[in-house]
Length: 634
Ligand code: ADP
Image (cartoon, rainbow, N blue to C red):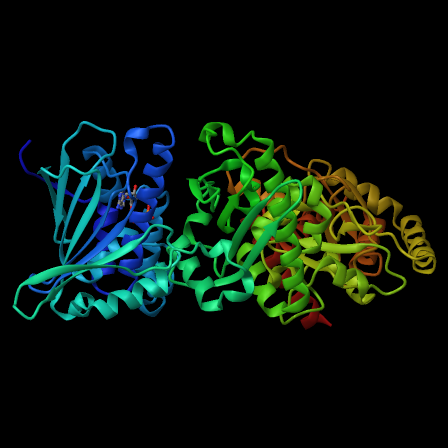
């Protein structure tokens, strides 16, 4: 095979561009990334060696600075890569959504970029922060293919060629940029390894050349990490800094975690877990097809997989960490893992623990919890819908905005319920696209007059979730825009009297409106929820809400046209006037026009586009002319 030059995938070029122009704040992490990759590669070959004894080896990672050449070489005797694997892994980025992510980076404010990219995890490419040129030689364990040499200056292309290396594994030579020569110093390398990679469970050996008195030189080898798996140590001897560094290693993020959970389970299932909740939702989580779990599974300290689907429910896919089981069988195949009862036990155990830690955070540090919920509330909601067993506990973790908290403070359903006045029987909510729109909704007029708070649901997923929470501690969750309110006796009888009277007085008008608007509404009646507006549209108890209908429309999904109920405010002077007009001449053509305008107004207050806006505006214009005539006459 002769040397071949290939272009990086566009996304890689863009990413390299960002990396090289040193948007990443901390250059040291390149070493962490290369060591993490080396350790992963060893974990993989060690797993294969369980069934292939030819692969036994002394697993190790070496670091060799070479002052004369200005290079540093990081080598491992791990799994290595075939030619195709190399092209796939290092020339392209397989992560879904990368393109969208990079587009977002390009348009964002440059000072936010380090933070954003910190949540992306640039891995191998981070080495280009410190390198003019990188050479990588790799040979796949257990393959007959010759070793491959890969070279790039981090511009738009790289070359590949054969190499005569014989040991399996990967060796990466970084040609340091002139201003990055500190990475040739032993002390610097030791410092970085100690900081970020101390717990790597394979030896990291620093090989440095020492000049002897007689000018001859000898390589000296020193293992510079302690190799103590952090999750196996006891919590009180681990510093916060160490927890953070391990998180950096696991997640490849350059941001600190929000919370860590270090946990040891005993009894029917024995395992240790070190879990992390990120501070911000990393970009990959926002991609719909990214459903890999964030946990690395070890069995008796042997790495098994970083994608064990059954180990956590999907809605907890934002949790990162390590689980090390001491009772699962080591020789289990990765395919069989998911159905293993041991995995199921771990799953149950972890879910319980994570939920209780979140509850703890909710109680102890509300500011932090709010920030968690802003980023990960979606996942909790997903859990309410999908995890039947833990539904109640997860429901307690939900937060919403509410009418009584104009500063947008978030409250839980329990906090809402605790504040309910004695004459309030139901928990009210209203859904819509934004707080601003909802605050103006006519559906809230009566509730407001009673000083009842209302939960504001502005996340499209909210309504869907609410189907799983028909009630909370004996109180019904009730949409302000649907059905009838459950009222205390006094208010109810007052309302009933008023409605009864209105129905008697305006029977003929109501009949007329029903007939006139037959094709649009399924009933016309007097309202208990309006105090100011003349009319509004309401749904039946089990109808999809207007918000839901809008979401479906936005998704281009056909749904049958929903007929709603037109409610009139019995106290509004418009009702009286219309009745007067009707009594004078029940076939006045104006009546039909006003009926339609009434319906149009109701649509407008719901933020629903009018079927014929032009007609509406002509009618309003005519009314204005009439109104002006009226005033100039009088
Ligand atoms: P990540 O580690 O997040 O997957 P990287 O860009 O660091 O992203 O690496 C991409 C892929 O290249 C890795 O997933 C791995 O398959 C492969 N790789 C990187 N370094 C090594 C190595 N030292 N040995 C074997 N494979 C490696």
